[in-house]
Figure 1 (spheres, rainbow, N blue to C red):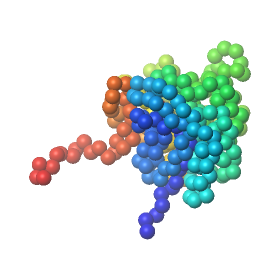
Figure 2: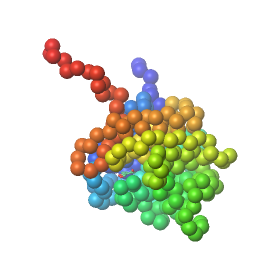
Figure 3: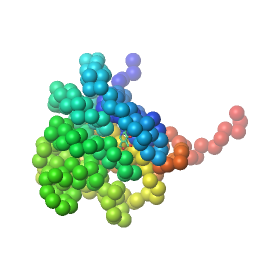
Figure 4: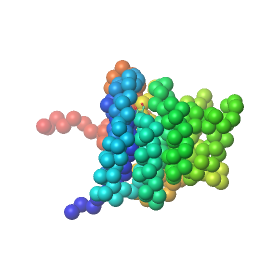
Amino acid sequence: MATTPPITLTFAGSDPSGGAGLQADLMTFASMGCHGLSVVTAITVQDTIGIESILPIDAEWVSDQARQLLEDMPIAAFKIGMVGSVENIATIAGIVADYPDIPLVVDPVLSSGRGDEMGNEDITQALLDLLIPQATLITPNSIEARRLTADEQDGELTLQSCAIQLLNTGCEYVLITGTHENTPEVTNILYGHNGIIRQDSWKRLPGSYHGSGCTLASAITALLAHGAPIETAIKDAQDYTWESLSAGFRPGMGQFLPDRFFWAQDINDEPDDKA
Ligand code: PXL
């Protein structure tokens, strides 16, 4: 019998366009050699241009989906993306609290780069109170990092002070991504309780991508599930995400999507003319 790959579980919203959300997470998990489980927290109506509407799934259904899987299979790492409602946050927080030794990556999905709103103030507060304190790592983009810390102080905080405030909630590491900053390169910074752990800069790619944050956070989750130390996971997941984005394609009229299976496209493959 073949060995079972590490099993990763994502709590996420469905993105029917296959760009972000649970579809992105499952593709990334599979591409990185994990078996992905998915608990649906919300369904969305969207295309590559934007989100039309969001329907949160009943918290009881979220709980039932997760509890049934957890009874059956050992999970190597959890990921939490779009949560859909405050009730879902409370439910998911209760579930992951029962598994304190399993790495937990929280992507606090509040704003997409293209301006879709996916979280209100209540959701932001519940994430801060219930989920972020339990996280091994959170992966806000800079807009989300500022939103999560906005009430605490007037004026614009530096990303470093956002990170410190977020670490003070109790999570172990904060990775703030810099795609939306007005800088020539994209700089992502990993903070821990002793300060900056690593800082990686990436050439900005032309075009606008949908699903890059989900890809990065689930790649980190997959690498942690394989047993990688956090720093290695952060570095290798960025490499993987950058490769996926640079191989990105534009299937519709809106944004580019990452190709999470870029390695399966062999550009040297000649069509088989003997066939
Ligand atoms: O990119 C964050 C994200 C997460 N989950 C779902 C989404 C999006 C962005 O559009 O649709 C379901």
